[in-house]
Image (cartoon, rainbow, N blue to C red; front, side):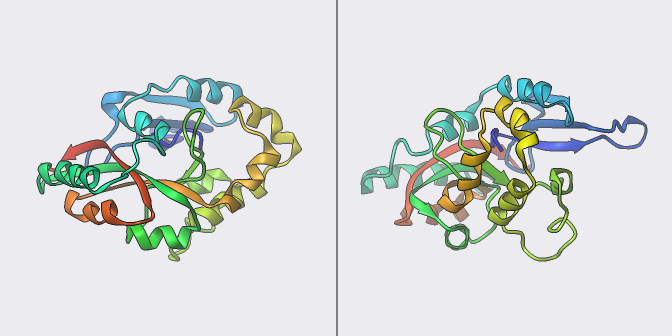
Amino acid sequence: MTNPDYRVVQFGGAGDDYREGWTTVEARRPSPSTGSEYGGWSTRLDDAEGAADVSRNLSGWSLTGALVKLTADPLQDEDERRQVKRVLRSLGPSVKVEVVVGLREPLPEPEVRKITVRTPDVLLFSTGPNGKPLSWDGSTYCDSRGFDAWCSSRVQPSYTREFETWISLLGPGDEKALTAFGLNLDELKTVPARGVHGFVLSGWPADLLTLVDDPTVMSLRVADIAVDV
């Protein structure tokens, strides 16, 4: 949630490599690429201080920079919008693109899904003026977050509802662990109701062009590309 530029890629391992309580994270990159070139980290889920230390020391890269500047470099005029379109069109049909989009004002998730057409990779629930925005993604490891309602259902998940469900499971006994990540429980409870401030989305360049002209979009930055070979 505090590092939307990374994702969980392994929970506990498999077969002989299975280790109860361990998780592995790596840089979030557009399919079909992986983040292995940026390195991966393993840590115990039941060791909050150790996990927070890993979290604080994850290497920054292009997606990190785009997230920190979520509301910067707005698409203020037609020339800037044309320039972003030129960049997207120049990438060619065999390239997957990852973009970070900032919204002019927070929107409820259903309105965001109308903009993106498909499910975003990550929803951003803050602007991140002092660092990375708070986020929620569609990790297939949602059962390890304390619930499995959407993992075992064919219903399209609501990231906002998942986020709220996870927060509802927290109590006073979790405050020490939250503090290690720079979070406050009372403040965290107010985050989902504030709406979505932006999102991370990956796809083909041609499919992302419509975002540039959407009046609700304030900024759009190409964070990463991956060649489909």
